[in-house]
Length: 346
Ligand code: 5AD
Image (cartoon, rainbow, N blue to C red; front, side, top):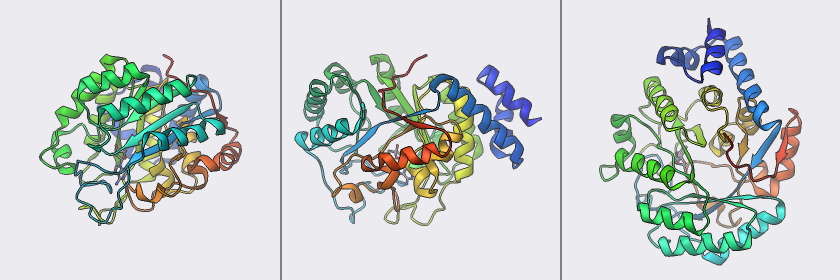
């Protein structure tokens, strides 16, 4: 019985692979509803009905990598490139701080011009001006010494999705010069240094099998990330995957619920990609067990340039100006925005 699998998953925070497969592929609507119900009860017991907000600043769309799925890959000659300077970034965060944000997420491509020195300067400046706020970095793979320097400068958290745990699936998504091993080494280094670490995957990326997803779940069970980012794959017109289908919203929601039951204390966002595919993505994500939303704080005239995939949401409830809209949407299901910095608590 599927309900019993849900109960067992909640109690043991684990299931044999076959049980995970059953929950992810069932089309029994009652079972899926029960899975989501237990996931949001677990989230509520930790976080109440509050949803943490994180201000997202996209600091550069220049990237040395060429991932087949990503719209800012270096091979996309149609992308209009930009990079923000230290003062631009601080100004975005200042505006965010005034709006109530107490976590800033600096995300960018692996831009060689934003070197270790640059990032350390940004983190130092933010830490000095906003000592009450958490600083999250999402800047890809860096030498361990750089991660250490950013941490000493005041960064607290790092987001780096593993994208897929399977070696052959990894090869399907990335060119030869990138490696799954390097990615995993970065993740373990970040943990060792003391960051709260986030990892995760795209749902429905080309070539992904249910077995891949189960392997991702088992990897995350072993790695114990403090944050878990899972959103649907969305094609981008100027990538090799332009003609692929988007990932499934319903599988994404189930996966959020399963992850919540496996990681009761983790910070799990209702992602931008989910909102891009579904107008009520935030609400659906929260009702499936997510407890974080990351509204866009990037300069308005740059937002359209940070296009990881087609029609990426960056407006309304997906933006810092739209916090009131987000609050209204959450209120319709009895939730509210929580402005506290929301560190991971065991
Ligand atoms: N669809 C969905 N998510 C994507 N990302 C990159 N490209 C896409 C896409 N086409 C995700 C990756 C990356 C994060 C910043 O955005 O998982 O880690």
